[in-house]
Length: 219
Image 1 (cartoon, one colour):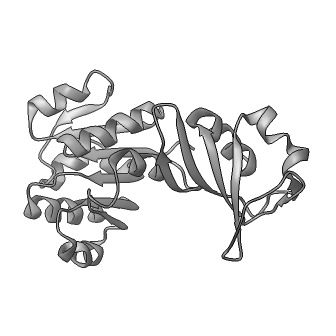
Image 2 (image 1 turned 90 degrees about the horizontal axis):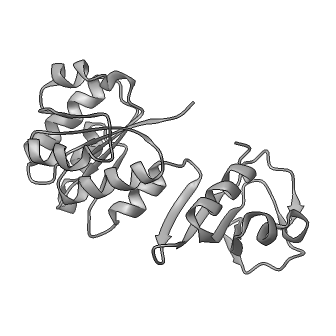
Image 3 (image 1 turned 180 degrees about the vertical axis):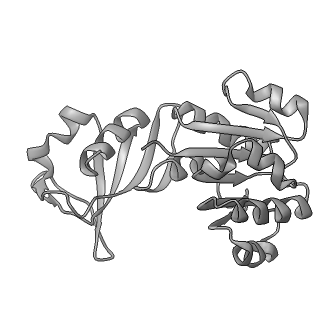
């Protein structure tokens, strides 16, 4: 079942997260108190609204009980971020990512129920969006407008096979530049096998990497 996402706060950071999620064809609800910020994302997100996230009833009315992952990108108001986190937790949102500007507040938000806390200087919006949209993307590095390097966790159910037998380059147009197994990193050769539980360092175009990810994770 396709996961649903909500981006709360559509300033520069929230806008970038929403934009990248939209680029990945995610199911997104985007909200902000500011009408201009909402209008800015309306061109690429159909489900957006002017809303005060500190009011639990307003979030409930917008259907936040069915949201799988909410990203709080308010940034300029600690109080609003705290109240929003509490509201989302009480509405049963399973995953809550909070953007904060000060690392001193990380533990506070963890205590309130945030599953992850992001400091903009530590993780770009584009990297965040690509990691949260895939349960198997452990990290994401954008090289340029076309190519990225991604760490992919291979499903434990994957049937062991060599890189060359899978025709990775020919079929998926990607290259496996590293394998991490039992915390040991190796630069692989064609005859090396991919096993369930491996972490693969893959380079290629994002759409090709996703096809390969779907293959090794049985989607």
